[in-house]
Length: 200
Image 1 (cartoon, one colour):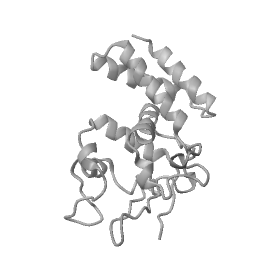
Image 2 (tube, rainbow, N blue to C red):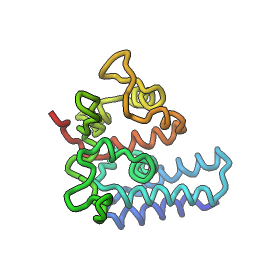
Image 3 (tube, one colour):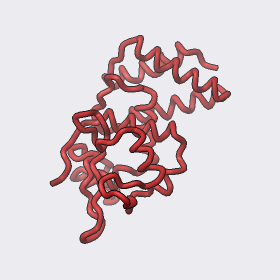
Image 4 (cartoon, rainbow, N blue to C red):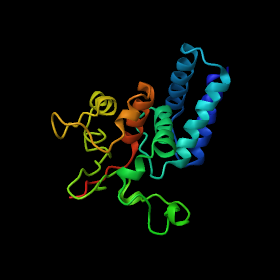
């Protein structure tokens, strides 16, 4: 098993390379939580190192500046990895998904539309649903949802804007099978991205 100091050092060196400074106590607490979780789950060190690499990759591919104050550094990085490398969340929740000249589907080098990142507004057919703004509101909650509400939307498709309705287009029947830690990581990452207004 890699030591807590190694995990903290690996994470802090990477964050510093991105210009994200964290206080030593904060990185030490984050690394301790990660190490405790790995030990409690009985995972081997190679799995722990793979998880750290996913977290580091998550920070590397985050297309917007992150507010890490009061956030769990490990979950933010993992959440970015899930949102930006696995979940395809940008495809629906950023409108348009890519910046001008940065559409990979047109053979251009990929550039995410950071001006509308996760602010919703993608229509799905005439009169159909429109993707929601997932950025944090002034209360710090992504899409103005508490974590239990976010979890319920991801697991059961509950539409909190339209009581009694289920989210349409949103692939919650796929995401509902994610473990709670991964959903928590998505939520923590969304807490860290810049807040943007919804499209009127």
